[in-house]
Every structure is written in structure tokens, then in C-alpha cells.
Length: 136
Image (cartoon, rainbow, N blue to C red; front, side):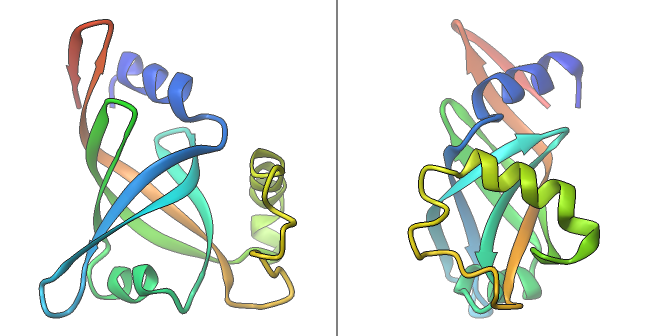
């Protein structure tokens, strides 16, 4: 990814942002949903539950489509595992802070080992800024 593209994604999505993520089920049917995510160094991150349809679809096909705020693209999704795993400690702290407005409303249960961090590595995309189209 070139630096300019990365800088625009960072500018738009480095705080709690709504993006859409599309997956495909094992019958080839596309599903799309809006998630809270933040962008860090070439990837989007969110917190989810391992039993969701999105995670079931990703286990079959990790390629996802993503979009939000004049950006659309693709990524490779992967579970980073339980949010409280030691290797997730620094990232989990950053996500908790980013999502602090809603994080403690009962939707997220960190005591459940199926509460995971989902990473989506941006593989390609198109975005617009000030009337200019950028591609990666």
C-alpha cells in the first residue's frame, strides 16, 4: 500500500468508525453487515464473537469486501483469538479505548473466551478524497 493511501485511511478510520464488511456463506450467498472498527497500519480491527455468521463465513473463505466513507476494497480476515490472550493485551487496550462509548453497554463479554479480535488486512481498494481517486 502506498503511503498516501495509508495516510487517508488512517485519517478517516483511526478512531471508532462504522464500516461495512461482506462475506460469502458456504452456498455462495453474500452477507453484509456494518461493524465498528479502527484502522491501524494497513488493517482494520474489531471485536466480535466467534459464533457469529461473519466468523463462520470467514472460516470458509477469509476474503472479505469492506467499505465506508468513500472507500471500498477487499481484505483478508483472520481471528487473532481471545481478546484477553496475553499477545492481544496492547491491541485490546487500544480497541477498548477506541470503542469506549459503547464497549461496556453489555454487548461485549470479555469473560467469554469466544470474544475475539478480528483483523482485516487491506489487500486492495479505491478511495476518493477532494475529488481525486486513489487506488491500491
